[in-house]
Amino acid sequence: MNSLDEDLFKNILLFINDKINDVEFILFLILGICSLIIKKYITDSVAQSENIFINTQKENLDNLNQIYFCLVQLSLKPNSKSNAKKLYELLLKNSYIVDIKENNDLLKNVYENYSKDKPLNEKLIFDYLRKIQDKIKEINNIINKNNSRYLEQQNNPVKFYLKKALFSLFLIIFILLILYVLRSLYVDLFT
Image (cartoon, rainbow, N blue to C red; front, side, top):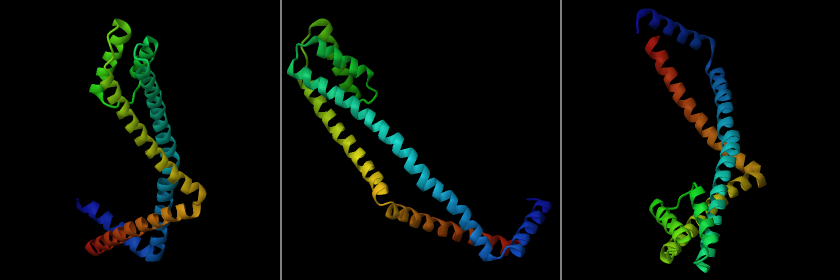
């Protein structure tokens, strides 16, 4: 820093030190930080993440359920070309892949079944069916966990927001402490 910058910096710090006493400074910081934290941690996080996450998980769950039911139908009627073709099309459209290698093997096997009359690999179908069941359970658990948080907010908003407010208050006090220490260090160093 050159001497002009140092002088300007000293003058700004002296002005802050002379014009604003500690109580006003702390109140100003509390108001500013509270508004930021409340917006970030309460309104944005609850509204946006809830909608985006739940919609994505429900879409994945719907895709996996469709594939699951097609796999069950195909395992019950292994010679059904319409079920094999329907499963093949669903697997191609599905963006949520359980396992890439098994997905590709199943796609190849189902395609050969309905286009070239080759027999289905039933072990592959049952293994894939089991993995899809596990993924469906996992997604259902995620949705239920997220819904329980959302229900907590809906059913007992005072408790929900009190938790958020206490966390926000802790952050505010921590940030204020850091700012106060930095302010004291700067005033002591440059005055």
